Structure formats: C-alpha cells, structure tokens
Length: 388
Ligand code: SF4
Image 1 (cartoon, rainbow, N blue to C red):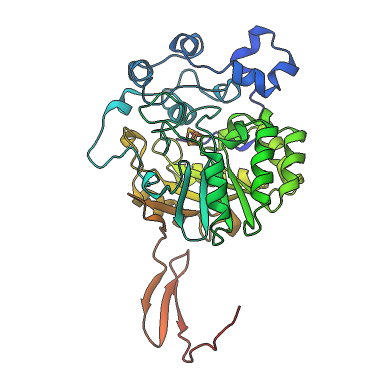
Image 2: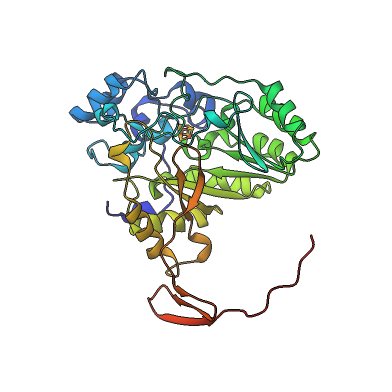
C-alpha cells in the first residue's frame, strides 16, 4: 500500500462523513457524543462507503463473534471507495473471519490458563495483566481477546476486582501491573481513579501501565481532567496501539502530547497486518510519526493465531524484513521490537534479523545494517560478581 504525502502529515479527522449533519464542534469533541454515535450497523456503513460483497457478508455473519463498532473519528479515516483501505481492513468485518484454520485458537496467548483470579493473568514472574473491562471504543477485527471483548461472543469476561486486588496484595513479587481489557480508558475518571488508588496503596506495586487504543480511536477522551488524574499515580506509563500512519491525526497527536505533558511516558504496540502495515515504507512512516507524537515505537507484534484472522496475518519473514529495513536506517528510538507471542502461553519471543554470523571463544563475527562484516574479540576473563 503506497503512502501518500498526506499520510505523513497530521490532518484532522473532522468532520468527514458527518459534514452535512451540522454537528457542533462541542459535540464532535465530546467523547460521549463520539461513543453514542458509533457506526454499528450495515445500514449506517452503507450510507457512507461502498462495501464489497465480502464485507457485507462479513458484517452480517460476524455479529455474534465480535461486535462491530467504529467511532465517527476513526470512521472518517476510511476511504469510501478503496476496499483495500488499511483503516477499513482493521475495523470492518469480512467474510474471511468465518473461515477457520486448524492452527487458530480462541485464546492464542493462553491467558485463561494463567488466571489465578478471574480477569487477572499472572504469566510472568513479577507482573500481572489486570483486565478491567470487556468494552472498547471500536473493535479491531484481529483482537487477541475477541473471545471476551465486546460482549457478544460465547465467553464473557468475569470481573472480580476485590479478589484481584487481594491476589496482588498477597503476592509481593508483583511489582508491575498492566491494566488492559477491553480498554481501561473507557472507564469513567472516577472508576479508574478508584482502581489506581487501590493499586498505589499496595507497597510492592512499583510500576503501573495502561494498555489503550482510546488515544487513537477516541482522542476526545484524553481530556485535561483525565490527564491530571493519571498524573497522581506516577510512575504510570501508557502503551497505545496504532498500526498505520493515517491513524495519527492532529487530534490524536494533541491527545498524546497532553498525556506526555502530564509526565506519562508513551509507547506504541502495533500488530503486523497484511494489507495494512506489512511494508518497510508504511512502518517507517508510522514510526516517524509516532516519534513526532512523543510516542516510542515499543512492540511490533506478529498477529496472534486468533480464529478467522488468516487474511490479516503477514508472514514472519515480512516482519523480519521490516526490522532489517528500519534498524540502522533510521533513529534507534524509532525501531520497535518485533515479537511473536508464543502460541498457547509461552510469552513474547523477540524476532530479529541475524546480525551474529559466528561466535566462538575468541570472537564474534557480526554484520551491520549495510551487510558489512566486523570481528569483535570475546572477553577472556569472567566478570566479578555484582551485588544488587
Ligand atoms: S482496542 Fe485492543 S482490546 Fe479492543 S478490540 Fe482492539 S485490540 Fe482488542
């Protein structure tokens, strides 16, 4: 998918398809208006964009798997006449979602089998994933948690906040809590503040993170009040989720800057998606725009083996080629770590181009981004013991 010059600029998403509806600026900029006016039906979509048969069938057939909802802000990024539009591929269902292959799973990261308490995943030694809601502002068709997210599938997310807080209190090894869902920033300021206050009352919880796609789907939610509330709980970091440079609008940039101005370090987790961002050119434009939004590209995920996602999965070879095309060719801060979340619950495994060509007791033979080879001598002495 070629990048147009507009993809590299920060244009506004407003008013787009809502231009003839006389929406006041105050309404457009209100997150409650955006949520109330999400595009959720076939009729609403067809009012604006020319659907393909695959999309129309997908919208009808996938309604009981993962709900369809798109905020007006994000919907405005869709190209009405391009069925291969990278924004469209992420949020408009396609009939391919109903085609399942044997390697696909409902819970590809094995989260359910690592839940000591409903909604709390304890897979890594010193940190937990705390699922605090099953709702999002818009729904991504490749969502890893589509089994529980949106409330229409067979499985429901059980939320047991008190049990989860107690588990964290009773496990002093937990120093890092990641709030996710669904999207935690969809909770009201008051509810979120209650959760953060309780977590901060636990002495061994050093570090709190929030995983959210709200700054991208619903930047209107990043209000000064929200930012002021979050700033009371530092160190608090936010991982956002943008996949294509078009998603970084002027509204998104302003929201991310507001968070950064309140001391929230920002990282981006994107998913490698076929026909969306599976080229060096698109990824380069994305990571450069992210840096301009003061957001560090953090992870590039290989798409999980979620049911009905084959049409969106790019090859691992493509992912490695993208990292090869970024590392050394652009700012180091701009290069995310490409990972595969090992199927079944093995955790994140880093994937890199092979820069280590030989390694023995005397030397390592390495290559750089220009494919030039260098030898570096291996250290002979063992290091003195370091005490923490
Ligand atoms: S925002 Fe995150 S949790 Fe929600 S549908 Fe998208 S990937 Fe899933």
